[in-house]
Length: 306
Image 1 (cartoon, one colour):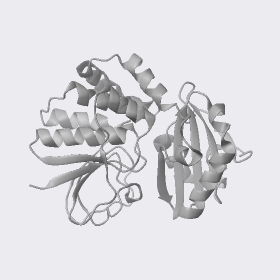
Image 2 (spheres, helix red, strand yellow):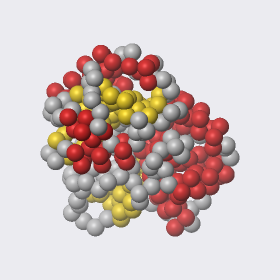
Image 3 (cartoon, helix red, strand yellow):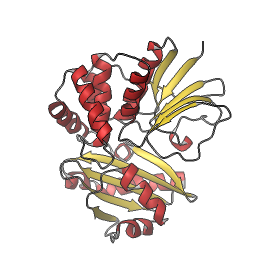
Image 4 (cartoon, one colour):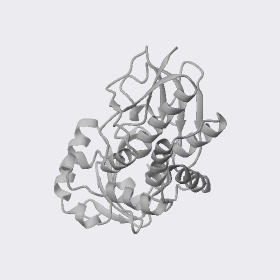
C-alpha cells in the first residue's frame, strides 16, 4: 500500500496545516497510509490552534521525489509547493484557489470549490465518505475557516463556510466568536519576528504574464505598529526581489478589526499596484480600503492590470 505525503503550500498558514492534518485523518479513517507535513515554519496563529486542540507541529518536508505519492491541499501551483513536485506522483488535490500551470502525467482526484477555506471542502469530503470527526480534528478545521475568512468578515467567505464552521463548532464544543477572536488575536502578535521573518510569515509567489510577483500578508490590530519597522521591511523585500528575480513584491499589512490594508510595494512593476487600485504610492506605500483577501482582492485584480 502506498503511503501518501500530504502538505499545503510554502509559508504555511492555519488552513494549510489544518488541511494537511485533517486529510491525514481522513485517509487513515479510510484505511490508507498517510502523513501530514509542512513546507515551512508555522505562524503564531497556527501554533495557538495546534496547542489548543493538542496537536504536534507536523514534520518539515524539504523535498519530494519521483518515488513519492503526494496529496496537495490548499494549493496547486508548483511555485508554492515542495521542491521536486514536478517529478512526484500527485494523486489528489483539495484546494480553493485558482488553478494555474498545473498538469500531471496520470489521472488524479481533484476537488476544488470557490469557498473561503480548504477545510470547508474537506468537511464535505468527510460527509461523502461517512467519516466521523473527533473534537480535536473538528476544532482544527474550524480554526482554519476562522483564519481564512477573518471570522466571516472576508469577501472570500461563503454561506457554506459559515454553515460548516457552525457544524464544526458544535463538534469541537467551542463558541465561534470567543475562540475565533482569541485565535485571530494570537496571529497579530508580530513582536518576535525579524523583518525577513515578517515578510515570509504568509507569503506566496505567483507568476502573471511572465512577471514573478511575491505577495506577503500579515494581520494586525494596529497598522502603524508594523510600519515602525518599514525601513527594515523594505530592505528585506529588496533582498527577496534581487534573489528571486521579482518584478513586484507586495507586502500587505491587514487590519483585522477595520478590514483594510496598507501595502508596501517594491520592484520595477509597482505601476501595476497604482493602476489596479487607483492609488498613488507615497514612499512605496498606499492605503487599500476594504482590501483583506489576497486570493480575491489582489491576485485577480493584479492579473487584469499587468
